Length: 108
Image 1 (cartoon, rainbow, N blue to C red):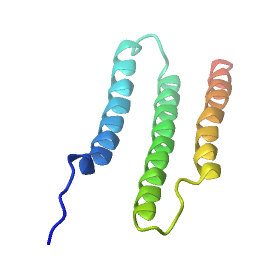
Image 2 (cartoon, rainbow, N blue to C red):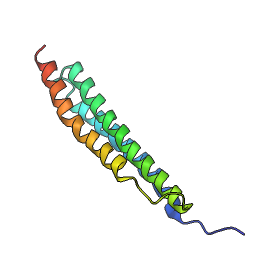
Image 3 (tube, one colour):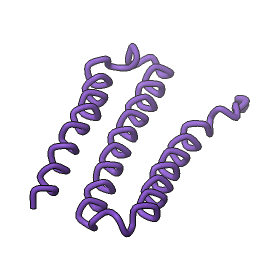
Image 4 (cartoon, rainbow, N blue to C red):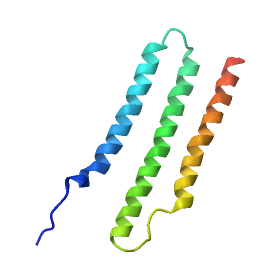
């Protein structure tokens, strides 16, 4: 006996792949547009920032997937709010961190 599979089964992998592609395109387009105007150290910092944000968004996706699987097996109640909001908080903390490092590069 097999259960029907919904096409939404693939949506998680699709959205994760789409997110990675979008971030990589942003890095590529930003580098092409600012290639001559921005020093390579600033470009490397921008690339690092975008990749860090991507990592934390992936952590959010992984947590959602894990929570959904455990909810389906009735092992857990759902998404842990503390972890979920902590990851969002870290993403928001990255913004002033990026600006601070950008200022430090400008003073060199």
